[in-house]
Length: 464
Image 1 (tube, rainbow, N blue to C red):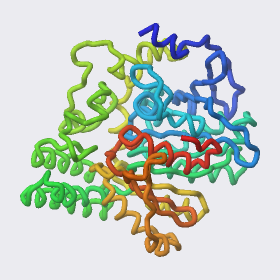
Image 2 (image 1 turned 90 degrees about the vertical axis):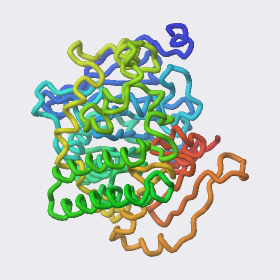
Image 3 (image 1 turned 180 degrees about the horizontal axis):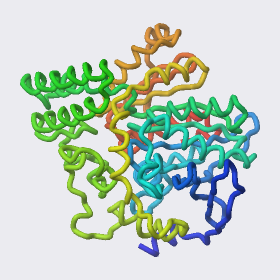
């Protein structure tokens, strides 16, 4: 393993600096000797620390008329680690075995990963009462981090920032987008916001849970009895949300997942073509329990971790993050382990988990911000059927025109014999239907995903 790491130039000599104090908080940073990577902590509130990791693309093209973009990746959960999952399992330069990833999104943009909210991944709190309870609180912390990173760095300020999210991260993305815009307009944040992209994002829990039963019935994973049981609970959630009973709706959400799991013989909520134990992404990652341990054990905690045999293989994400990665980073406090506080995040946010964020999407569109929605065809938990349902609820003035347009087929490279997806766009709204992918679109359809990201970020380097 050490040889492989050296082969991939993984262990560069690190440097450690103390950033200037902004807003009264301390920011520590380190990085590789060649400057291609930087990482560090920002104390976004007293005793609340966010960890970030920035990769500079080797494919960067200097074009003053079309600046090279930065992509901020926000993971879901809430409580999933972008530094771990998004980086090593989905879009970063190295995979979970520290081998080069040909489909890394670094080919289209610099990549910024943040373990958010605090207590996620390598991020931590010194007092458990400091864990955020709402999407807005998480967005405020992220805005503080962006101020620390961008305000004193003219190079970063020249690059437009694209906030790209997956799953629950979509709720963080739209609230951060609005929070960042407010700070930019007030002159408190020196940053260009290029756009927001919502990948299989939990924007409207109501529309998603209402879609589950009919979708799974159509693909033969539920029968009529399972459909009736699913619809009954979904309608109960709808009523609870209408009455503002968000915590109660979260409890019913878990009950609904449990009923569907039983009725479908454990369908994978992230890819309806397989059972949960055979998820094409999670079954090779290991440690999903440790990241999501705050979630209800009846479903999301039910998966047996591949690390249960005590193996220290890098196929086991916690062992990778708490072993070679921790050793490389050098600045992780001794008292902090990757995912060690993960059980704090979801319970703290249970009251916001089922709250919709459709209005925030509308606000971004009204302000002229580019909003991209992309969805995997095989996803259940954030199904395309549900995404289309909340899209129809937008109050955006150009929605009717958008919906009336035909879609354009997508292919991979020069191969036009196999349709990989479809796209529709009008003005600043874009929607991608990605075929053959579940919840984890970049992993399951890497080629068309990479081309999509080049379009989203308007990367001047559009070669395949």
